[in-house]
Length: 110
Length: 400
Image (cartoon, rainbow over all chains, first blue to last red):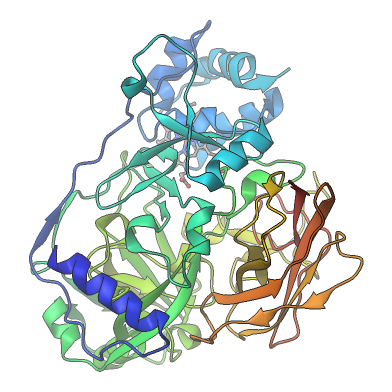
C-alpha cells in the first residue's frame, strides 16, 4: 500500500515536469510470486498430438506453437530442427516426422 | 474480426474466449490483435494488471496499447514482460542477492545491493522496447514471438553506473566485451543460458545503469527484481533482468544469444529480400525512430467531436526533433506540437488539432524525425527475425 502511494507520488511529480527526489534506496528483503503455469492451455487434438505433448512442452507452453502464423511443412521442420540443435531438445530422428506431420496438420499449411 | 477486436480493445472492454455454455464468470477475457492467430487472453500475473498473454510459460505479456495514451511513463503493473527461459526464480531475496564481477578484472567482486548504495546514484528515463516489437505485423510473417506494438514501455530507472562498478573491479588491458547473466535459467542443461554482451566502450558509457528502481519503486519481479541492466537507446535484449553476474571477456562473446540469435542483416538498411540467405549479420543494437497515435485505433470509428490527435515518439537516444501528422495517408503533412522533454531516451508526447467531417473516412499517418536526422520509412524493410520495425503507422478511421 505504501509502495503504491510512493509510486503514484513519483509519477505525479514527473508528470508535472519536476525531477524526482534524488534518493531511492535499493530494495531489501524477499519478494515471492506464484506464476500460473500453463493455465488450461493444450495442443489441439489430432493424430500425433501425443508426440508433440511429449517433446514440445518441457521448456515452454504450447502457446509458443499456437500463436505462430500459419507455417509451411518446411518451416515447421526448421522449427523442430532448431529445437534440437540450438536448444538441445531431446528428440530422436524417429520422433521428428510424426511431430512435423502433427504441427503441419494442426498449425500449418501443406 | 480485426476491427471489432481493436475497437473493443481501445474501449477497454473485452471479447469472450470461445462461445460456450459456461457461466460468464468462467470465461477468460481476450483481445484480438490485428493479425492471424492474434487472439490473446487478458490475465493478471503477479504484480501486474491484466495484460495480453502471448505465453504463460515463460511469461510473455504485452501492454494493452491504450495504456500509452495515459501518460509519458508506463506504470510498472502495465509494463510488458518477456523472458526467454522458463526456469525463473519466483522467490528472490534482495538482501541476499549478489552480483559477481569476474573475468578480465584486477579485483573480482561480489556486490550486494548495499554495496551498490555506496556508489553515486543516477536516474534516467528510458524506453525499453523488445527487438521483436510489432513482429506479428511483419509481411511476409516470420516465426518468433508474435507481438503487436505493445512490447515496449517508458520508465524512470534509478541505480548506479555500470562504469563505476567496472572501475571498482579494475578492467585489465585485455578486456574486450562485458557479458551479463541473470538468474533466469534453462529447463534442460542442453539449452544455452541467456547471456548478453556489450563492447567495453559501450559498457563504460555514461548512461548504462544497474537499476534497482523503476518509476521510483522496486522493479516488479517479472521485470527483473531486484536489479536489471539498463541500456538506454538499445533494444531490451541487452537489459538483462535479475542481473547476477558480470564477466569481463578477452574476446567477442560467441555464446548462442550473441552469435546466432538477435542478429540483423549487415546491409545498408538492415533489410533483405524475403527468403534471402547467406548475407552477413551483426548483433542488433540501437533502436530505430518510431511514433504512434495513442487515441485512435486502426479500423475504428471516431467521434466528429474529437478535436485532438495525440501520441508518442522515441528513437535510439538522439531525441525527437519533429512529429508530423497526415490525414490523407501521407500525401500532405503538418507539424504536431511536442510535449515536455523528459529526456532524450524517453517517450516524447505529441498532439495535433483535428478537424473532421461526419461521414468521411481518413487515413491518419504519423511520422517522427529524430535529432540525428533519421526518420520513419513509408514501407517497412524485411528481415528474417522481424526486428527493427519502424514503418510510418497508419490508422484508417471513419467519422461517426
